[in-house]
Image (cartoon, rainbow over all chains, first blue to last red; front, side, top):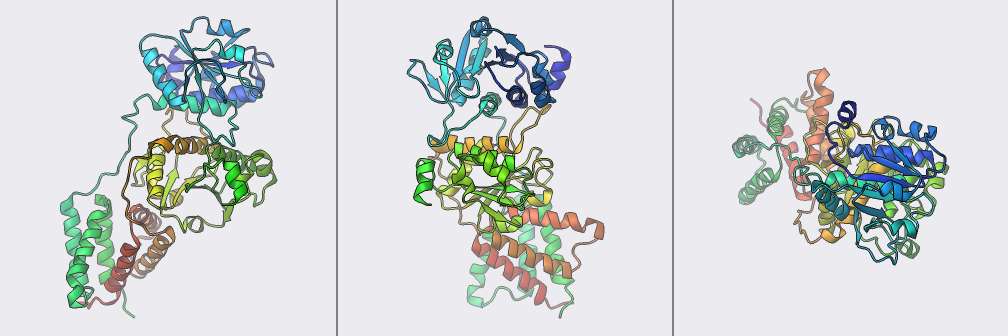
Length: 253
Length: 253
């Protein structure tokens, strides 16, 4: 991979699957697919017999910014040529056929693809033309079928959406672990304690804990609520300010 | 839900998150978002102040087939109105802000949303306008941020692609719903909104928002913090009492 590509891909591009668009029709969809791929760090696209030839100005216009993909797209006349150097091929279809092949989700496919690529295999994913999708003769050349689980009563994924979902799963499988939840850094308990004390003191002086026989449970509820809140240090500072301003500077009526 | 909707959704529609498009611009993107939702069985869309009004012929044309979504879309003038009955709200943003909120992947968000909805909460997901995305003031009203992990050197997800990915994760998590979360029953957003207003009014009178050039960001921080807290109805009542007692009954001096 050239240095300029690497900088464009932000270093995301190691060995990757090749996405093969089979007989794509609209240039706009080729461009949108290139963008969808690059969103998730994928740069290797092949086109098999694109209807409007190549280069395609509509594809270039739509891809704007995703030139890292289109600049090195490979155009082949037939599917066998496009698959020649690949060792494992997935075919995306809306409806799994009666072809006896494993049918997997995008998630399972991309997890497996990472393992295969990690082991040195060259992997491809086939996407069919806009209207009809892949023909049985295309799918027959693949090792496995990828099918996106959709609402059976409404399945209208278009080409670039299908590319988007598979590419998303590719990146998602990268380090499913380190993509985990980022939680704000909470204040240490001692700060919550001081805030609770400050608030209780003020409320005590304001006769909030009343009547006497309910005071104890009101205090408990207050503590309970404060300790259940995910308060950061900044939140705690803000609440100290709020308590102070509310109780001291209010020009009484 | 009407019988015709159920047949259209193929029985996929149980309790679901509401997808809220905030100030969407192009009707085509509203229609494409409706299709993306219905692909994964989601039917509840709200629009906040759509630029071109409503109904929108371009949206209807693009949505062709996804009328189960558009026929019952709810159009609101402001974000607080759109969130009023929701108890937990996610905001999608490309770049997590300095707003202190949990930042989660679509996967983690939809897994959690299933657990929350299973526990009876009403959940929403906010999507920003095409060009600029959600403003800080919008995000400040959400409980958590959803961010799609993308190639940092090329992040060009558009509105309907973002909707597609979150909807895809919603359906994908269908089988993963054995993760039980015991969630306290949270107050609906309208009650948070009223508490925020009451507190802001008091603080305003106490000259808390000072100096003038910081007032706006102080207000934003306050909103942001309140919407991040898991407040129950009882908590909200207690805070109304606290604000009232602190500001009215404190014997000065």
